[in-house]
Length: 190
Image (tube, rainbow, N blue to C red):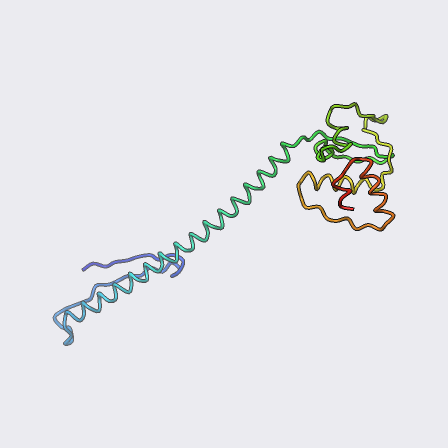
């Protein structure tokens, strides 16, 4: 016989277990050698069952870690793709002077609703009137333009538009602005 040692990580917290062979001598206190060996075999079987359980527990733990890492990798890759998408956008910045108030956005946002006046203005097919600082100038009330710009950004990102809740006076004014800019989708939200 020889001594068998094994190491079982985590589940037995680094304890080293040793299986000693039975000591069978001339004085076995009346016990049969076969009984001693049988008990030793049972001890060895139990020890191996513990080893198998440790291996199984370790495999489950590793599988759980692998799944967690895969989820983190997938989330990271999705974020990388979103950053690439943002960087690939037509990022030509535009500063608009709407009735004396400045708004900054990009041409892709202004062009996201086909058939709109803003899409036509910033398609490159027409010259756009500018103010003394070179900003595109539109002589309109700037009060509700932030709502229009917000609508266009949501449309560009293809998020679900929310129904606008405005009082009657504000709704009428936003509707007039949506009609002026040719934003049919915004008109349907009012």
